[in-house]
Image (tube, rainbow, N blue to C red; front, side, top):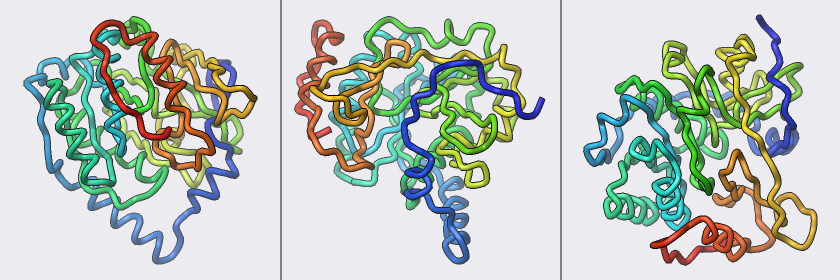
Amino acid sequence: MPGCNAPEDEDRSRITVAEWERLNRPPRGAAFLRYHWRTFRFLRTSAPVSELQGKQQAFREAIIASVAFNRPDVIEWQIHLVRRYLAEHESYVVFDNSKKQDAREAIRDLCRRHSVPYVALPRNRLVVSRSHGQALNWIVRNFVTRFGPKVFGFIDHDIFPTEPFSVAEKMQGKSIYGSVRRDTPTPGGWFLWPAFSFFDGSLLRLRLDFAPSYEFHMDSGGGNWPVLYRSIDPALVRLAEVKPVHFGPGDDPSQDFFMSIDGWLHVTNASNWRRQEIDRSKELVALLRQAGGPEQPDVKFGPI
C-alpha cells in the first residue's frame, strides 16, 4: 500500500534535510559516473581480512553488525557492554570501515584479544553518507546473505547497551525494528536510522539498499524507502523509544545531550563528521562506567 506512514513516534532528527543535502550533494556528470564506478568496485571486492573466531554457527541465528570507523577506544567499550548486556553477543561482528590504517590495525588487534569476529571492509573511497550506506550494502550482500540468519541488523560504533537487551524479543511478530527518521521532504516518507535497525531474515529476498536516496532526499538507509518501507504493513514495524540524556549545562542538542534508544546510549558524532565545539569524553566515560560493572575496560578516550 504505497504511501503508508510509519507508526506514530516522536521524530528527533539526527540531521536536518538542508544539512544533509549540503554534505551530500547529488553527484552529476563525471562525478556521477565516478560514484557509481567506485560503488561497483567496492561492493564486488572481497574483505582483505575476515577473522570469524569460529562463530559461524551463531550467524545462522542472528548477525549484529557494528560498523567501526577510526575509533578503537569507542569499539573497546562497545565490545565490553555488548558482552555484558546483549543476548545475541555471540552474533556480534565488527566490520571495519576505517579510513586510517593505524585505526584498522588497532581495532583488529582489539577484536583478536577479545575473540570478537572482525571483518575489514575493502578500502572505501566514498564519503559521508555514501560511505556508510554502501558499507551496509557490502555487509548484506557479501556477508549476511552467506549465512541467511533469522534476524540481522546494524549498530553504529558509538552506541552502547546499558541494560539487558534481546533483539530476538524485540523482533517477535515484527519484520523490522529500530529508530525511525522522518527528516525528508518526501510526503509520508520515513526510514529506519541504520545505526540502530534490525530486520527479519526473510527480507533478504528483497534487493535491500541502505545507500542514501537522492531521489527521495533521505540519508543512509533511505534507499529502502521504495523497496521496503513505503509498502510495509505498519503492524510489522516496531519503533524504538528515543529519549534525550542531558549531561551538559545548556540546551544545545549536539553539545549538552546524548540519546537513549531503548536502553542503548548513543553518543552522536563520534566520527567527528560535524565539528564538535566541546569534548564530551569525560561525561561519556562517567555514564559508561555506571553500566560497565566489574572488569570494565580502562580506556583513554580521544576527544568526542
